[in-house]
Image 1 (cartoon, rainbow, N blue to C red):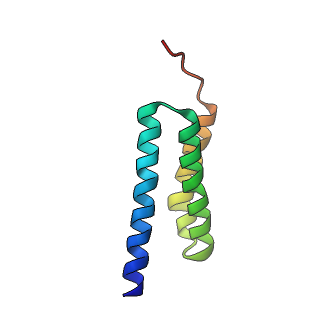
Image 2 (image 1 turned 120 degrees about the vertical axis):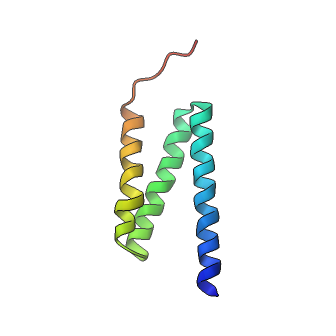
Length: 79
C-alpha cells in the first residue's frame, strides 16, 4: 500500500515535468526548456543515487543530452 502512494506521487511529479516541457516547447521559451530539463536531470541523478543506478541513464542522460542541445542551438529570430 505504501509503494502505491509513492508510485502515484512519482507519476504526478513526472506529469508536471511533462506539462512543463510541453509548455516550454509550445511557448518556444529557451529558459523554460532549460529549467524543466534541469529538473529532470536532478530527478534522474537523485533516482540513480537513491533508487536504482539505471535511472541515471534512462532518465538523466537523455535529459542532459537535450539540455546540451538546447544550449548549443542557435537563437531563432522572431518575426
